[in-house]
Image (cartoon, rainbow, N blue to C red; front, side):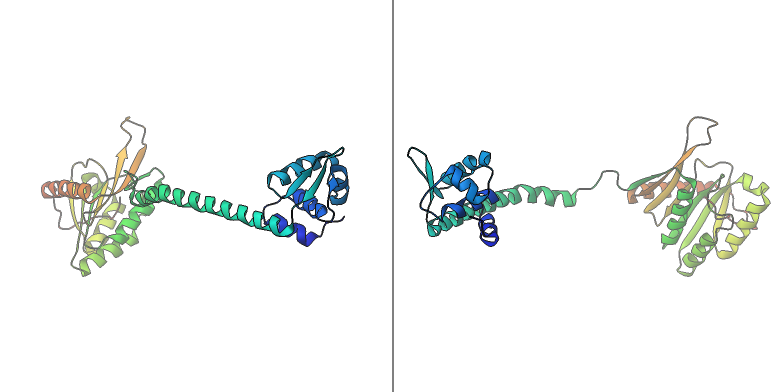
Length: 275
């Protein structure tokens, strides 16, 4: 017998394999089949048919018939389908229980994970000069009330730093503050002095000191950009840290103001807007 594809597919959807479905459909056509007969009728390989018949017997969908040549009969379709549906319901119940248990185990972990933060996710490490310049520009743009800067070479911002001048003007219009401390060696650089004057005209306050410990930007007492020069003398390598941490920013702001109070004000000059 050639199995009906639709019936085979329906039995497969109820949990049978394709061979099992084809063998069952062959069995229902007669009262009893031998293994060889059902293999031919169902077009199932002879070496596989015994395994398939055993599976149907275990599912209570087929009944073995003892005799000189063993045979097999199908249980009634109504009973077979009832049993297959029962097996599907049992499977769904097990899946439902497993799903509920898994949800109970995973939901607290997921909830805790939503509140988890990397202990250092407020620090960004920068080594590429271009990336450092981009973050410097970003801090200038984000500043709303106050921008404090230690300026010393080498500079990574563009020479003109038009963004910095725009920031200074914006802060001053809003009643904010822009201050910078610059090293005395800037007084020997004509290009730097020209930028100092441009930033002064924009409204920035500048002072000069013999030395500065590092390059530093503190914006709104919450955001910090600072360089960490390589401690090995002569390497010239540096790493910049972008840190969004109000407590640290407040401490560095106090350090800036301490240096500011001791720095020298030169009325005719101002800050170049470099980092």
